[in-house]
Image (cartoon, rainbow, N blue to C red; front, side, top):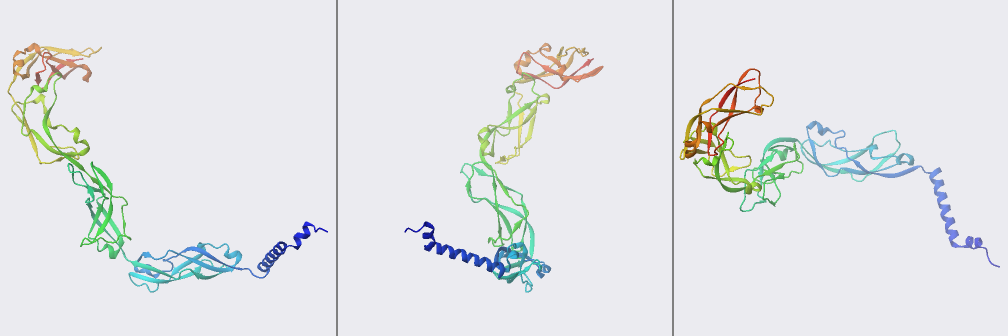
Length: 412
């Protein structure tokens, strides 16, 4: 007669194993529930409170370094209590009674409960000792030197004076280290530069013998330091003179100028070297031009430029050769852009108007060659009579101009 499937299962070893497991679990639950309520657990990474109940604070000492920051704490107590504990429920602190001065100490660790109400015991610590270094803190301010010896500059370029921002720093740290600092140097990483660049820098501390100091526990009042490295290129360009108050239509190339220096050598930012093709030493006002007078100009360079040969000034003289001047009387006074304004020009002629220009051209000019023009869009018109400046025009040539300033009287 065949056995049923249930009978076969009940007679098998698998049923015996399952029954044994279930009986063991039941026994464990009974023991835990009715006979044992204590449990053991480990709370990880409880921070070490160096300052807890510490007399060293009265000695004006600061912690410079410590070997470990946390420990694991094993506790024993009622299961429902220890199961809810966190690292905030326990204080781990060192015994600092023997700390009397700056130095390194091996301090024993203790642990206490923050709340005495909770019923559990501290059984053990993963570490019972911490190494701590104490020192007095000091601070001192230094001017920062710059070290660019790591930079690679192409042979046809040059480096001008480097600057650092900020150029001063206050150093704070262990008194023993700060007292040894003789200089603070900003160092940049090795790289090749072909144009002016701003580079981040790292501060390095040196003693009086140029030995680098350990800056592990040093702090600064500024976090970032930037070194500006001006990369220049030397060029030689011609010197020129330009003019102001140039009358409309006048060709300034008619004027011949003698310069004390025909060219100048400059060091300019490398990226703009190709665009610099001349140097304008200064400007001569044609309205007050004096022939054969030496106009002296101080050399003024744009920011970032360098005067290589340190030329301090350049003089320019407008030569009288092929130039002539004479006076005429202007009879034609034109009013333009008057619109609906009723303006009357009271001045009939302008005497002693001086013409300067090419000798042959000036000789042929007459009183009728010059026109006085008044553009009403440039006049702040007032009621009654007023005196206003006019523009002098020589329509027939670009080789001569009127020197001086002239006025007429008008009436509104």
